[in-house]
Structure formats: structure tokens, C-alpha cells
Image (tube, rainbow, N blue to C red; front, side):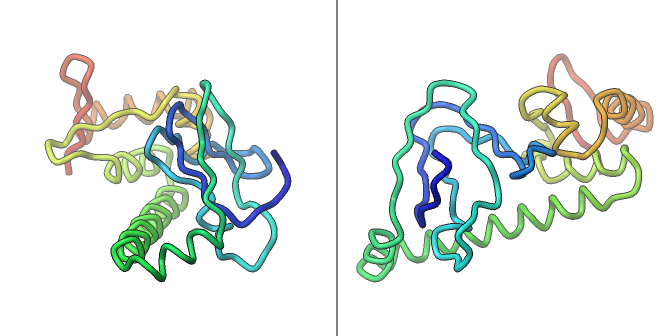
Length: 167
């Protein structure tokens, strides 16, 4: 629905894609257990900063601001967890900004992959290459060239179907 409400959505089942409100860029993919709408929950502006589009059948629970305020005041552990979640969101957005402001396509891809790297160095590509290209603000062919350039330069290696990022 496009009517505004101060609420956070919790995905119980399914997959959604988060895009800029103008549809210009895919920003993220969310799955069961992920939340969206945190910028609208306590924000003064009555407009959404992103658009959420279901990619599968999705079950979402909306928690209105009044309910969240009650929980945050009554249960300190929920308040602490929410603050941790928001801190992680700020870190994610800062990484996103560094990716989008990196100069070359290779630089943007490399910076993005560093933010997605697991402890063993492996990375999981989010969705399709078209979605990733949109997230990085580049064409799909530029993304493939950037990936190949990182492989040749040794910043990225592939073992079977798994990619690893090196520093």
C-alpha cells in the first residue's frame, strides 16, 4: 500500500527488493527476519525514503510507532537491540556511500564486496547481476568487466562457484 504510516515492517516469510523511491537503483534484498521502514517509524517527514517490492509471496507484520514506543520504554533489551540495529544500518549506509563514491567500476565493486565479505573471505552475490549493477550505479556489462578485472588483478578469486575477496 502507498498510504504512509509510522510503522516498521518485519518480514516473516518471503523476499523483497528495496529500491530508491524513484526506482533508479536497487539498494538491498531483504528476507525473513529482516525489517524495513525504520526511517519512517519515528521520522517527522511523512514520506518513505525507499520502495519495497515483493519478489515472492511475502508475509509481513507491521508494528506501529505507538506499539514500538511502548515496547522500547517497557523492555530495555528491545531498546538496546533496536539501537544496535540502527547503528548497523548507519554502518551499512556509510559503506554504501563509499561504494557509490568510489571512482571506477572496479573500485565500486571491490568496495562493495569488502562490505559483504564473510570471515573466511567469501562473498555471496545479492540476487541477479542486473540488481547488483543497479545497486552500484553501473551497467551490467560494466559490472562483468569490473568483476573480470578484479579476478585478473587478484583482488577477487573464484573457487568452484564461490568467490573470495582479498585485500
